[in-house]
Amino acid sequence: MAVGERVWVLRTGKTSATTVTAITATSSKGLHSPVLLNGGFPVVDEIVTAFDSIEKVTLAKHGLKPLIATCKAMGTCEAMLDLFLNEDRELVTSSK
Image 1 (cartoon, one colour):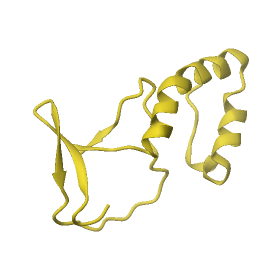
Image 2 (cartoon, helix red, strand yellow):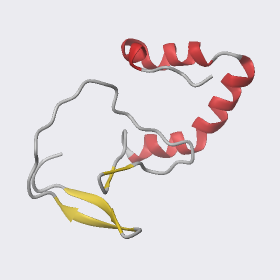
Image 3 (tube, helix red, strand yellow):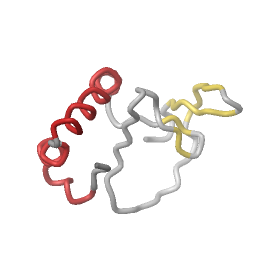
Image 4 (tube, helix red, strand yellow):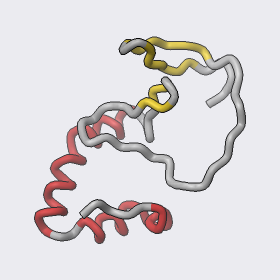
């Protein structure tokens, strides 16, 4: 994010575009890649967030829920997390 960019905000139940006018630097350790099973966008402090490009968000919307259902049914969720997350794997624990 940079000053001058447009972002979407959620206020009183409605989204609208706004321009970034200032940024406060923060730092924290962790994996910041929110993915919602229903294909929605997470909202953090009234800012609509996305973990990737709209194409990848759309792919997750259509494919993540059945993928998780399948891995749970087959007992392969841990292997899928290892496959997809690689070096970030230690930051995530699955909800079996």
